[in-house]
Image 1: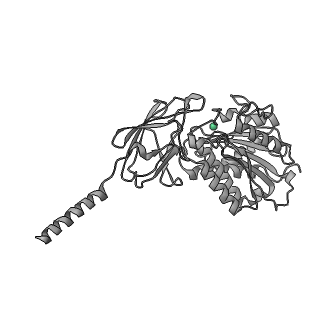
Image 2 (image 1 turned 60 degrees about the vertical axis):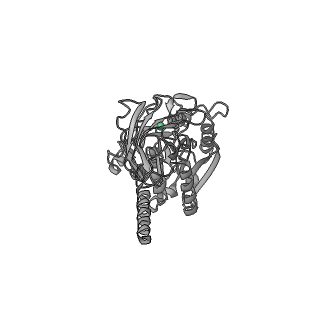
Image 3 (image 1 turned 180 degrees about the vertical axis):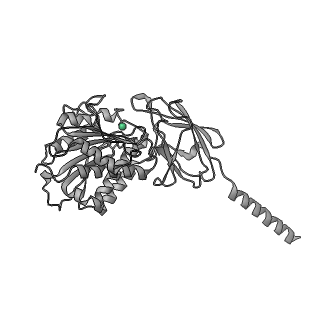
Length: 404
Ligand SMILES: [Zn+2]
């Protein structure tokens, strides 16, 4: 009798055990976090059914019509659950214009696409996720990049390449994050500083992460063995994220003042009183570079819009280099048009000299590139490759040294 009850007890324990192993708790609103490194300020979530939620997006500071992009973390309990999100938000700039990505580790990203798209409805759409295989999930705009990841990337560069990488901290954002400018040049080279070509690469819209990966592709190529010659005869400056408070808040185009960062350039000169906080600091720094013995030769603003990468040139006459069509042809030979469209000339900016491309072009009379597109490039690797090919085209077009 005792044996039978012992057996019965063991069986019951076994069954309970099996059940608890296999039981999957459905996702709850408490599993979602909107204020991490990839966050979305003011965004709320409401449960509609099993693994089925409605998300209401917050808006950018002082811009009630501009949605914050949806970035979040599922902090646990995702494994075994699928997920459907209905997302609603203010209409501009459409929340569902671009793809998003999800990841288990913030490194390996999987693209995910909207059910309807912004042409159907820019204020409401649906995302359907697969069944997750791990508990923690990260989610964000395009191929996401958090401010903290940029800091990690930079400290890694300083450890590995301290001979020719320099990082200046120019100030703090309104959210207290560092404003960095990274400079790469080979100090041991034989070319005097004043004879080096100088290229300045920036990203003003913090939510345009594909543009930031394009810049990282340039940085990684420059630091490779292949980039050595270019490092010896040029100086390259990078501002990877002009508004580093963006990713925590899901801000697509703005800083904490709600100012569109690519309408923040002052072609008459930087202005501490009237300019967006971060824009003033970067423009003031750029003006100092322009006064130095190695002023900028080309300035690039990196953005995204739909399609392949699309470089648009505000050109200047410069008899030290060939015709701009030579540059176009170099790039055509390097890159398939499915990845990078042919370089084209743009006479002026439709929004005026307040952008970080046309503004410096007007202020200093230097060549500028509005580097758009890549909205249809869905992986980190392809975005980085586009940057690598663009900087290789610079290497081949800006031959030798300047002022010689
Ligand atoms: Zn942009």
